[in-house]
Image 1 (spheres, one colour):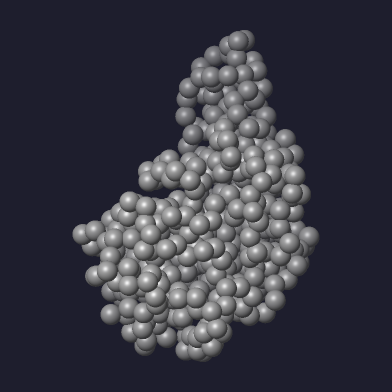
Image 2: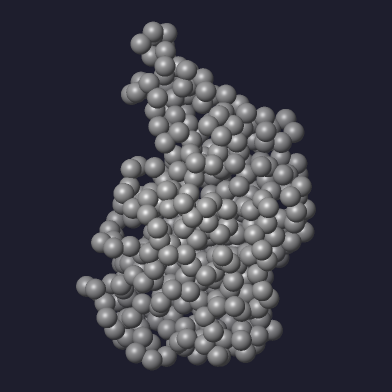
Length: 445
């Protein structure tokens, strides 16, 4: 059972008390200090919560018909309402996500529930593809890739869009521009797809950042028919060289010691349920992002990922550990940025973190876990964020074949971020997404 004592150990007694006092009125936004205005040089940090996060056990219902349905459908995995932090409106927060409670009380955490799409697909790969493309009429490019097409220079701005993962997900692929991958502080390293051999299928490959350079350098002999392909490869190679040369002194980042502890660090106050060290994967990625921001790398968007959330079994142990690592890493990153000065101002003022997962889980538990479901959770962290609960919490008494009905279109998240944080006009935003979607209020208009 999750006890009050365990919650206070994870969140801090003062934070828990403040949360209860602010949330008891059922507020759905506007907690804590007012948000700051959008800075001149905003930065978006995307966290892919990979595997389908069971957000019902992140924000369980605390009362009413939803609570009755939750208790009925989750007799062993359900969390007792008495151990949750009360967010108001019949919603509580899991104590294992307790590192985020302080951000919530300060008004710096916005939680958007019931996020999804019409006719959802419960395949990880298909759902990630839908989320990545984020278009009214998908065409194989990603919403952030299309932003790069629209806003980044075709041959310059090589460091404006970065992923610290070793792959290049569809979300980051444009028709003429894509992001680049930098996975370590020693500089840019060609990802494995660029080192593979093969023939260029077209003179101008829309994914040239992944394929063209590898084809050009991997060819055994010149082929006049592939001249255009070699030109594309040369351009891609130049962009990668420019990225490496712009990455810091001699292609390496200056050393930096984080100002706070992250999950996995010696002395970090939270551990796994069995007392072992928390996962360091996301923590290390966010440390690298903080290091790049501190080094004034001219990136506007960073992409990170934390996997492991496909909790079909052993969820009672695995999910709490995942939430401790996820919430702890994001909270540490936010606090770490407060002491980082950049040429464009304080780093904490410049950053908004956006977390998403490809779907939620089914409401009914199944053999110690939960199966693929719908209507997920997204959350946002930053000084420009208006904290609180957003989106309608799904009705657990009115399910669609055992799954929640979505209440917020996922492209509304993108529209809000593009226009209110990344500074695109309404027309530019709608062009990127292929249609107009309602903007949400977690960022000021």
